[in-house]
Length: 421
Ligand code: AMP
Ligand code: GLY
Image (cartoon, rainbow, N blue to C red; front, side):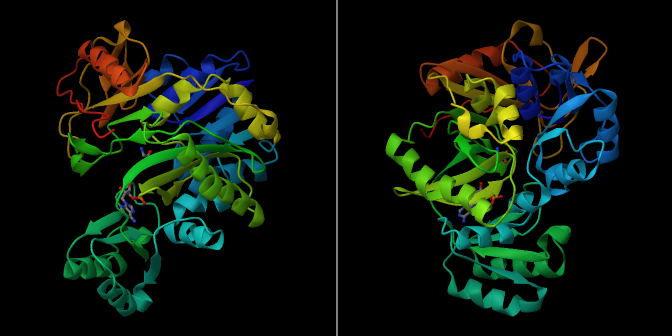
């Protein structure tokens, strides 16, 4: 069966790398892909929101299964687009329809969903420009730090955590009245601050059954010791040492199960990954956010740990028989360390030649592109070096050894992935 992976990051390279290992995978395509996906798939120069372009490529290349990496095309309704088109209706899509993608596309929708299904999360209220005074009063009655979230997609930048009340009020006004985050902040969720350690839980579902994938933890800040600006993610480990069997069962019972049951009760079909961003507060887990895709760079540690054929999982999701599948997971720990362009997440240069890629394994490329026989940097996050080890420390050390073999001008990576575990 021919397969198309939509996206261009480390997540998509990892998915292609894994799918390519399956005897069930025929010709593999990536759109638009990067230099990494080009090593195991055929890149198609089509942007992720160009649904007509994707349609033509699917028909032309006899693609039967489409795996959607990023959230944007899902929130824009790519799955619905396939279902509505008679030429595409028989093509399987891994990634939820628009209704379910709203779990990521609207924070208010996600909070209402959690309240309705008694899923533990931070207390909250939502405001628009019409009840801004109420919002200010809500802030006055809350304890700092204040958490302000733009309702819609804001490229990972829509969450503000502010200590000072007056500044929080000012930001609330700026979000609602000056469209600080564009349309995304026409509505704002103000939420209780939760103090604890975060982790990522990925669930694969066909809408009836589900499989919980191995837990992972990512490192979002640019600087060591979790300091400095937020990034897309600088590294990850899986499993997460503090997730004991009992804690995992608690997450399953209080969060994963009610999430899948909630979707069913609400009549929201879901075929794909649910990414549950969790925070461990004392001995409890609470949901920080839902995403309707895999995380990046968590994918670079979670997917390599799956021993079960990924194609067989996707086919089971598509056919609605995930309940029959057992998940087999590699016991060893995996770690990934992300190498970025100098200056990222602020301004950085692209087009730097990368050397050493031929000598290494499990290096998943993110912001790269091919230029003849060269691979050039093409984004902030450039590549992720993944390794296995008896524990996360050994795995992280191996990733550092791998990265010593790779070079490009301005290469930077954190030397302390897993420091807090
Ligand atoms: P989100 O986009 O909702 O994942 O928020 C981005 C980041 O802000 C999260 O990964 C957390 O680090 C932080 N965050 C979000 N909500 C809260 C909260 N209620 N309490 C503490 N930190 C939060
Ligand atoms: N690593 C977090 C995310 O993909 O959103």
